[in-house]
Length: 187
Image (tube, rainbow, N blue to C red; front, side, top):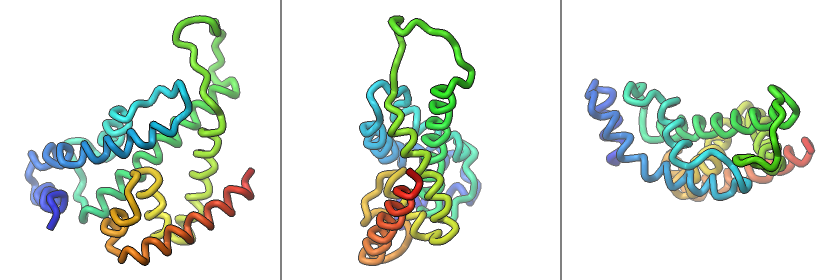
């Protein structure tokens, strides 16, 4: 039984200190994943990996952790929380680009940043297509969330999902092809 699973059992048993232990245990891993995700962001992005992890932790319940069934349940929820944070951020940025809450600013002033729209638009398209994929292939969609939004390797995601590595590799190949086809149709 992994450390995460043991701590999740302690949370279910009512151990109030276990939530803090859980955060300490998964923080470094989630921070590394968030840093990888943020490295691919456009120059001038404002969300930092630490902020992404902390926001995801808050959305997961912070110190009042729900009763996670197991490690897979926790990491699936973490992937979904990070996904929603990134999608919400992309939507806000797009709304601002389109004039929502428009404010006149001095483009030569300090703090002015221009973000590339392609990344946010692609993330929003991926979110839309992923929602469709969840309805058709929920397990494969979970694999995509774990790989894309949490940054787990195929091997790590297979462990979380409790499937064999070859199965996870087949699911990943299928999922990439399906998502690619659907996203190309959305352009």
